[in-house]
Amino acid sequence: MKIVITGFGGSGRTSLFAACTGKDMEEASRQSIGVVQVPDERLNKLSAIFNPKKTVFTTIDFVDSLPLDSHSKSDKTSLFETLRNGDALVCVISAFQHDSDGEILDELNRLRLDILINDLDMAVKRSERLEKEIRICKDKGEKQKELALVKRIQPVLENEQFLYSMDFDKDELMILRNFGLLSRKPCIYVLNCSEEMDAERIAGLEDAVRRQLDEVSDPSPVISLNASIEAEIAAMDSADREDFLKEYGISECGRDKLIKAVYRRIDYITFFTVGEDECRSWKIPAGSTAVDAARAIHSDLARGFIRAEVVSAEDLLRLGSHNEAKKEGVLRLEGKTYLVKDGDTLNIMFNI
Image (cartoon, rainbow, N blue to C red; front, top):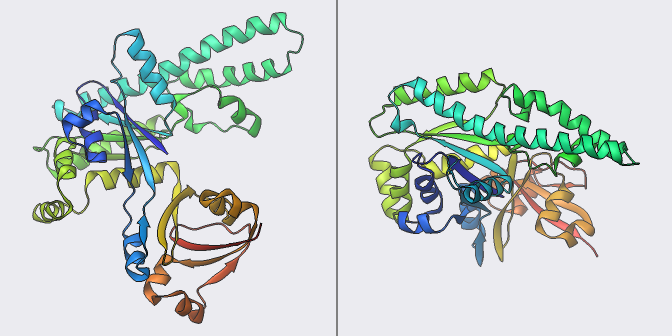
C-alpha cells in the first residue's frame, strides 16, 4: 500500500512525512519514500501469549511528493506520476499559516481544484483523441464505449466534484484503470495546525472543512495535528516518546491517527496469524473471503485451501490459548466464502 503525501509548498508535507517515517528532517528532505510499520496493540498482546521467534507488523509505504505548486514542466510531470502511483492521497493544508477559516477553506479548494484540473485535462484530451480515432477506424465498438465513459465523467469534473459519487460497472472500471484519475483516489485531509490553536478552535476548523467537503459530496476524513511537533515525537526513542505523550496528555500520536484514517478511508481491515514461530498482522480489503486472506499470505495457501480455523483476537486474548477457545466454542472452522472480520486470527488448512 502506497500513501502519497501532497500539498502546496510550505504546507508541512515533509514534516508530516518525517512524523510518519521517524526520519529526522534532514534525512526526510533527501529521501521521499519510507516504509512504516502499522502499529497494532492486539499483535503486541498476542505475541506476549505465544512468545514467537519473531513478530511481524504489516507495513505501509509513505511517499513525500513534490509540492502541488511546482512550476517546472519536469517537476509537474514527476509530481503527477507520483500521485497516480499512490493508492491514496494525504492532502496537507497549512492551517498554521492562516488567520481565518476562510483562508484555510480557500487552500482546501485550490488543492482540490489542482487535482480536478489534472483529471479534466486528461478527459478533454482523451475525448478529442477518441473522436478522431473513431472517425477513421473500422472497429469502433470499444472506442465508442470508452468515449461514452469519458463524456460521462467530464461534466462531473467540470462541476468541481471528485468522482467518488459516481457508480461504474465492471467494464467501466476496467477502462478507468488506464486513466490514472486522481479524483478517484481515496483522500485524507490533514489540517497542519499551529501550537497556538486550542482544542475548541481546531474542532471548529475541522467542522468548517467537513461542511465544505459535504457540499461537494466528498466523504474524505479530516484530521488535525501539528506536523513539526509530531516529527519531533517520532524522532524520540520509544521510552521518551511514551513519557512525552503522557506529560502532555496526548492519547495518540499523529502517525497512528493518520494510519487509522487511511485504513478507514480505503476500507482495509487487519487479520492475524499466530504461533510459536511467528505472530503477524496482515492487511486486506474489507469484504475479503478466507481464500483472499490465504492468498495474502501465500498463493499456495489459496490454491490448496481446505478450510480455516478462525477465532477473534479479542477472544483469544481473553482465553489465552486455542485449546481454551475450542472449549468455549469460539474457535470455528470456516470455508472459502467466509468473510474475514477485522481482528480475526486465521490458521489456514491447505493441501497441494
